[in-house]
Image 1 (cartoon, rainbow, N blue to C red):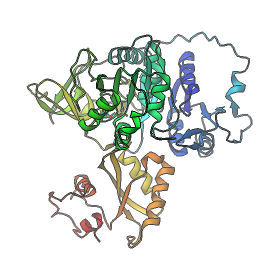
Image 2: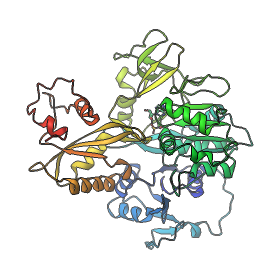
Image 3: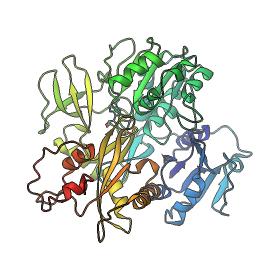
Image 4: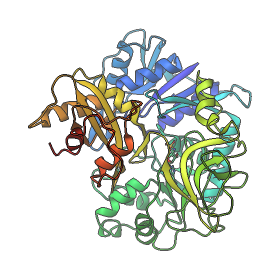
Length: 515
Ligand code: 7RM
């Protein structure tokens, strides 16, 4: 059976995950920031019989209505769901559907705290986690019971140098892989205390992280570059107001960390005495692949340094041939299997093979990132090679956002690209073609309507920061959208590409917002 967990970041979310693992049911956590429609799609793909949710969750002082989103998802499909378990967490009044919904506190009442584990095969699926790729449909990444847990446990121990007295805080939500491997599974499998927090880094104020570290004597802190950059912007005086001397190790994950943010993290948060582990890995890899080992590897700001023991990483060219020499640039591949690797894409093994293996004739696992390896053998991740954006550490497919936009009654065509953003790393930039005439003049109301539409379809994290209207999208003769041109335009850079083949060169000014 598959169980969907759609909850805020509260202990019960982890209890629900471990509970599923205990009875051999496959869990699939859906991030609470995803919309009802995204939830419905995941329930349907997983064929889930149960949903565990809460009346609501807290985010930045507001209540996120998880139960009402669940109700909406179930009223528009998701017919496989038999029961919904609801945790009472906020004061929000929620309707309960007789026969389908039951309260968590009623479900556990009178039950024993002991539960014999269901013994499963090592390869029994532990969980599915949906992640974005280069098509409009998220993929259910399938992880195994034994290999995954081994990877999460061992990398936690090696990379974070865990000791029994540590207080470990990874700020990720359990809706992402980081929250699976380094909140729910890895540190706890090592018997270490973890900190959970529900909310946002700047609510009720910008000292939230630093106060939690001080109050709970956090010794190891693991967060994303986007959060570091956002807090760095607010000034050194904020962390200076807190006692951060309990920290002994800092980690970074989710996107490349720029050297300036690395140095600030090291100086202001780490007091120049904490090593920083910049950890490269993916939903698919299950656990950290490339990272310094504290006390062993010398670090360089901006590089995730070297592969962990047993991880056979290489750089290959367009044809899949390893680039000769230590210094190399190209595609990042992993040449041998590792315990926590994904086993397949749920119900779509063909897509699994095609996405991760076929590009280089099934010889290597293709990570989808490009990289540079320097003369010392250290890796510098350059970014994605597919149409996947990394917005504030969240993985979003451009096709998913495009599909959401064209589902709006006024939109005929859409192309989404990423634009560099100083805090979020990347922001969503959409070029759209309307049915009928191109809107001109004051388009703000339509832009807001489309942003709200995308939030409803996918979730607020996918909302475009910019939307521009044109009569057409720029295409090659074979009909492919010229994404590189659109990226140049989104950045506001000078166009150096050849645009002589464009059927309607006049659209370039429209795309640039100049006419
Ligand atoms: C853990 C996670 C995976 C993608 C990956 C990269 C990027 C992640 C780093 C990084 C540079 C890092 N899983 N990425 N970590 N890039 N340095 N330390 O984020 O599946 O959500 O995303 O994130 O592009 O392919 S994920």
